[in-house]
Image (cartoon, rainbow, N blue to C red):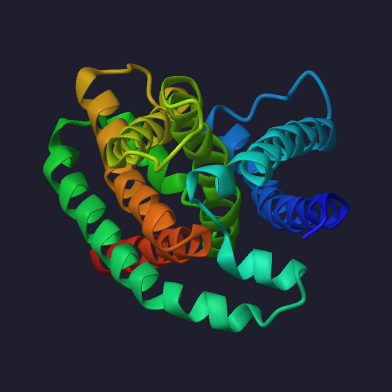
Length: 260
């Protein structure tokens, strides 16, 4: 493959992934009015459409950075988005997606059950105000599937986890030879913890007090799934992690409906 052809393929891959991530970002926009109402219903200093536009643009910037990191670094450390890469190369993407579906579904069921079980253990220790506000803020299933399943996986796995694998490989191994397994596991764990920490700001808005139990619940519950998603991204591909993320939310929604 010529250098120009590789660059063109990378540009197309980046655009496809960024566009998919922005679809997820758009699905999150209807959540803002509901969040504001839960926080007290006060009139924001700027119009709601401006808040949504700023958030949408900010997410677009983060997605662009994550997409670029993955496009430039993933292949160097043996990571990939097989179906998306096949699509932009005009090959049959279904052949690349099919082997990722069953592991993704299995991982998603395991992740959803783990979160539901851990949540049931932690529930008595969480601030009642947080529990009540979280129920009111229940995200639409479309937002969970598109923003969680696509946008967050591009940000956390394709972008951050790829970078965390590449950094030690580049500077400790000079980018030569095989990537040590330990580098992948370190990146999986760190990105999973970051994924959990990333949910703390919203949790702190919903609770009058940020207690140790609340921090533990938010970080650990999300990190449990992050470990599964990171492993699937490493061993199967980005799309497998996306499938798992979506299935996890389906399991959680089913559990919520049973306990309502």
